[in-house]
Length: 140
Image (tube, rainbow, N blue to C red; front, side, top):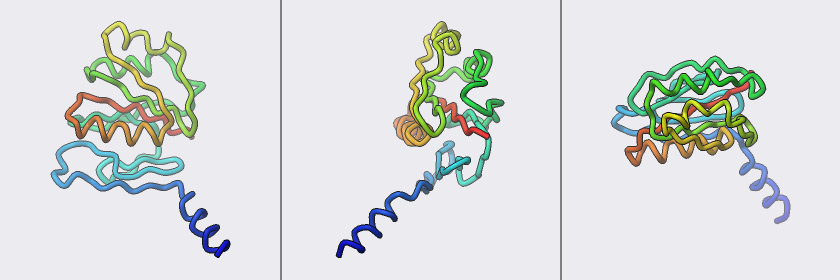
């Protein structure tokens, strides 16, 4: 019985996740993610991206947390979201406030969480009809 429990626990540790796509296909939805990638509407992206529900997915030229700069976050201003969900990579790391100051000046909120939580939160806010952007850091 102990071996069965151990096998079940091991299965639960799987890091890849498949989410169900919205049947309408009209909104950008995170449909899966794992180490080094995210899927938006079943299309795999292996680099950092910016996502909004009704806009094209944009490549985000960030390869590591340490190289984040104010201009990376400033790219979000033109998208005019209410809130930005920043997925900081595999672990939770907060960007220095000077990096997100331009967003704050435009009254755009920034919520920071790890990559997986950011993907799930983006989907929830998008489904609620919020004008949300996800800035998803996928480190090379």
